[in-house]
Every structure is written in structure tokens, then in C-alpha cells.
Length: 429
Picture 1 (cartoon, one colour):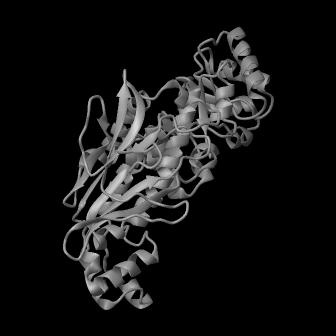
Picture 2 (tube, rainbow, N blue to C red):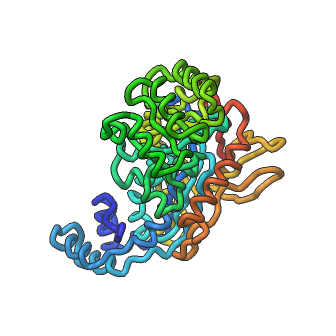
Picture 3 (cartoon, one colour):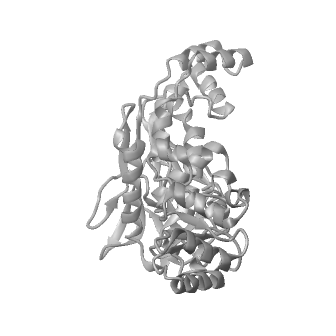
């Protein structure tokens, strides 16, 4: 399926106007960045790179798309002919997926003709804005969980394809599994899931429901114990599955007190190894509040797929340099109030001391790396050819590993859930 029309109309009308006088053929540099983090956040996580590269390979205008553009008279016939042969042939560099990002640093750099590059604006922003919002929220939840596993289970709280993207982004950020099967098939994210309240309600008794589940899935399954009375359900669960019962799940109520009661009940019934998972409208704050409770794992839905209140990352796609009529490079930037941009090709690095990040330095006009500075941009597309290392399930796993390493460089203040400024400053040099 092509991704060519996953875009805004004005991308094509700009192309149309620029092709008429040749200006669209000027070499240009665009950058994706955010001016600020969501209020109170200390850092963000880049996610969506692998998805963007996959969609870039499918960014083609076939006959159905071209026919529709003709009927709607979106652009001139000559532009239709140009679009028929469209293939991105430029270069794209960017932060590795899973990298920590901070305001005003370019996390994606697109260099090609204006015509080729401008068409990618909406595609890039729709992917990076959403995926990074999910990954950034999920990373905070992972930190709040203090090493205990989390599962993403928010598919029914977002769009059907956003659900797949969210599952992937949460996995990159450190979640261990998802309930979404398409995310498992497409991106290799481990899947999980057993039964909902409807399954218990289907049977004449709770014991019959538990028995059916254990017979189908084995005693290591997770039994949902809050359909009726939790203490009674725990007793029934252990009686049916035995002390080998894998886990019980609580999806409602006053979790700190309930978890303590259930833990005591399980221990008294001779099931000390049975784990407790909770799934009741969790976010990073409720997860942190359960640090002292004997919770073994968490399932998170609405909060993670909506970026925990910030479903977009405020990223923008801006032209920062282009060749002029003489073929010389010119730096350009907006001067709009509160939306000014800094022109020029940039090279971001992360300064470190004793293994910890201290500063983001965005260099303009130079790619010199000093001392312990770590370059942040890597080639993603070269002369139109995608680096396949960053795509598919393998690229997703690579991004997950990189997120852990990148977050590991942050000072402890990065993981505070209280309001604060970005964990390290960003400056231009």
C-alpha cells in the first residue's frame, strides 16, 4: 500500500508552484525538531524512525493516486507527470531510534531538492510526533516501575493503526510485551493476554471459568480475580490451579491496599510464587505510588497510547538551508514571534562527563567532535537507499537496546516525575 497521499494538500501545491519556475529543483536541507518538551518533562525519546523508513520505501504515486489528483485538479498535468516518477533520491540522517532528545536539536535532517524533500513533511511529522510521544511517556513509566515489567494494552483506546505504532513505541521504551497481535506480527513485539471479565461472566460460576482457562492455558496462566469478590476469587484460583498458579490480575479498586491483601492471601494459601499484576488505569504517577506495594508487573492502556496527556511531541519540519540561483548555499530561518528558527546545517553532539550527559551542543557549519562528545546523527538514507539495519523487527529491537543505553547516560534528576526543566541544557555553537 502506498503512503504517498498520507500528506497535506499544500505539500503538493508548493511543489506545483516551485516546479513551474524551477525553484523546486534547488538543493535544500530540512530539519525535524521540537522547540520544547511537554510541560514538566525532563527528556523525550525518539521513536518512529523504523516506521518512517518503511513508509518512505512505499512513498510512490501509482495510477489510482494520480487519477484522483487529476480528477480533483490538485496540481497541474506537468506536476502529475513529475509525481509519476517520484522516488526520493536524497540523504537523510537522524538520531538513532530510541535516542534521548531535547529541545532545539535536529533529530532528523533531510537533504535533497526542495521538490523531493518537502513532500515528506507530513509523513515524517505524523509518525515522529505520535511515536515519540508514546515512547517518551512509556520511558517515564518504565523508570517509575523500578525494574518490574510492563505490558502495553491500549489498542482499544486509540485508532487501529495507531495502536500498532503505540505498541512498537512502548516496546522500544522498555515495555516487555503488548496485547496487540499486529504489532507482534509486523514488528516482533512479544504478545501477551489471557482473559477479560466477559469470560468469567460467561460461566455459571467463577470456578468454572477459572477451570476452563487453566485447562486451556495451563496453571501458569494469569487469572482475573476482581469480577466479583477478590478474596473469594483468590481462594478459588489457587484451588483450581494449585500453588503453580502463574499470576492473578487486579483491574479495579484501591490498588495499594488490595495488592497487600492479595499478597498475604496468596502466601497463606501456599502460593508464594504466584505473581500479582495490576491493570487499572495506570500512568507513571500511579505506578510510582505502587513502588512499595508487592506488585510484580503492570499493564498500561489509555495513558501510554495517549502519551500520558501529551499525544503529540510538538515536532516541526523546517527548511534551514538551500542553494540560491547561483548555486551557493544560503542559511534561512523564520523570525516569527515565538516560532523563530535558527538557519544553517547543524551537527548535534552530546557532551558527557564521567559517562553522564552534561550538555547538548548543536554545532552550525562544523562537524568537529571534541573529547567525550558523542555525535547524535547517523546516516539513515543515502542517495535514496534506506539503511535496512533500522527497519523491521531487527531495527525495533536495536532501537530498544539503544534507548536503554541512551537513558543510562542521563543524570538521576531525569527520572523525577515532578515538574522541571530539560535534564541538560541545549546550546548552539
